[in-house]
Image (cartoon, rainbow, N blue to C red; front, top):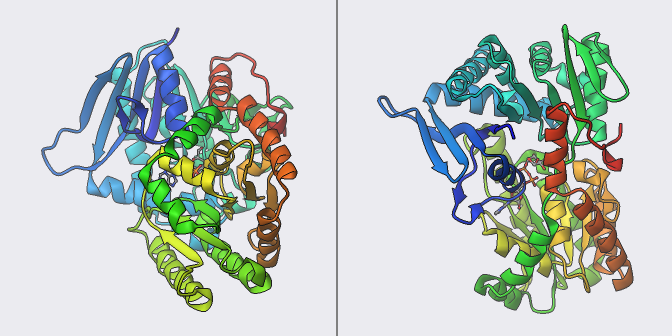
Length: 466
Ligand code: ADQ
């Protein structure tokens, strides 16, 4: 079988037991172990002069090749164009989009530089799977260097409407660069429709009903491939982690109160402020819930060197303080707001202990926390998922209470309904979602994408049809 080469901005840290993170890392690492291959990307380090650039380590059949970036590369490619221009645009936040042409030049330069480091490591039969918005021009650079291998790209974020994407000045260069791949995958049917719309209306290309694209003088395949998890693995982690001391201690402090849980990277796309305020509305409109419920938000900070993130963090801290000041009692703090990372087993057991999973991004490619929350539930007495319609996961998780995060009262009503939902209804919603999570797990996502990349037909899941 041909070797698989994974290229992503960061290479997930792998310990003896496998990747420390969930989702993508687990799914991709499994495939690499099966076929043998390489994971190539940035080491996460910023290099001083004279430090080695490329580090290669071997773990069984898998090679890890990581590369350091200079401060200038980091500022232009990662902090600048990827996270201050593309990320907000991809999440429909044109109001936060910053653009500097020299950052875009840096973005292309680093993509070309990384591609040039990969070329000598490639074998003719390798298939190359590139991940996410940091690396859109990667295939173009490989093609210019004469690489003829099969090249695939998967976008983990939403693909925005053409009207939004065109606010980024080099939008046409970006989409033209995408057409240098043989396969481009997005998460959901709405993302696929947005991509088709751009190709047809902006680029004057054509797309057949089964996703064959002709644009910019190239032919390629596009499709929706919703990423999943391994639900049974999360379920057993949740059951075993319940024995953990931290989880016991948390339960003790909760007493008989119900727990509403949210877990996200601290990011403006995740809708934390709207969520805090909707919880406040619940306390305001439903006095019976006061002191009976605690909302715990776990949100480790990311991209703290960008202004939009600093501003959001201080706003959130003051809102949590204000709401706690308004409703708190000597023996009850309504919102617990925590900034740390937790071990996957601890997180899964916290999910299991929570009556409500409160997952309300303003925009999200998929949102794996929604899936992990459901998978972690006790099948006999499961909690309820309250899910934003703007998360990709809402296309698949029909057993959730679907909300619009802008609608504060609607969200508060959904929380109230979730907190008082009868057990039979909770069980039936849980069973439906668990079946979908098993049927469309992370191996299905990966195998379908790789089948398309090898040029074979793949079955489109019901929920991913355009
Ligand atoms: P993210 O935006 O990072 O991913 P998400 O899909 O929710 O969002 O994945 C986050 C992962 O990190 C989950 O597995 C979660 O359990 C874990 N995590 C979050 N907070 C944690 C904490 N405090 N401690 C430990 N682990 C934590 C991007 C896209 C998403 C898309 C994924 C996968 O933005 O839309 O679903 O990629 O494609």
